[in-house]
Image 1 (tube, rainbow, N blue to C red):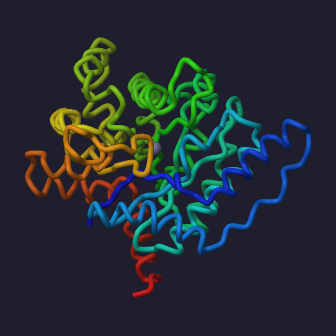
Image 2: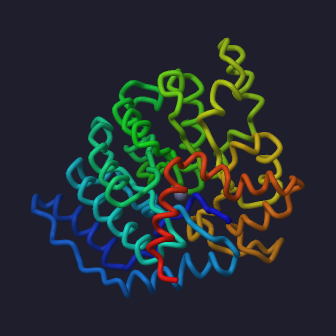
Length: 343
Ligand SMILES: [Zn+2]
């Protein structure tokens, strides 16, 4: 089985995101948000059959761990109550996709984060998504201010209430920023990769995994700059008298394969142990074009993994085994969804 651990619902029916614009506009005018729009099952089916499902089938992957559009989370917009309503709407839509396509999608939730508001505020939505919807993880934004980094680093006790709940529920977090509202940063070209790199260093300089030995983070986009600069991170840890990174971080931190060229994928597989790498493409996402050097889509990452000189057993771990370990609830949830699926 080929499990893509990083996909967002970037093709949701238009009225869903239109409502978000109306919600934020209404708040600006001091009015109540309008009622949520109707989204039919047929509209959801069309958006998936002509979108992510089509690419799964064309590229030969089986399952996507699916979450709301990341740049659309917009935690810097509105306030805690608008974030709650928006997260609830987005997560409900993901649940409907997983119910309509139980063999192809398993849910991960966005959290109703707001800069300066305790992450404990996200617990109710996380519990609802995991216990009622059968979601297997969450996307955790390390910078809800959208590029101004106003919240404490991920190792700070500020985040502990959420970590306690994640550990209790046995769900990992993909550390994933949303859109940048700071014009110095391009959302997917710099803010995403900055977020990945900063999050890794925040973990390195903290004892968060001593406090939470079973807490798991997936750092997406191939880990930002981390694998390329692994020597720097190892050296910094050594200067700080910290244990080797394999011991200090790699029981808890994992990287996905959203690296859109072969040399980057080779470097990732060379530097990071196989057990810490999870297959992902982030399709349909930030980079949608065809690479003229290969004739294939940049984000068709399965092609790169196929070309790696790794033993088949290692590739199986990257494609499936590691995802089943990191997402502790995935195997049981898949069994439930397959049992509910039409034959
Ligand atoms: Zn993403």
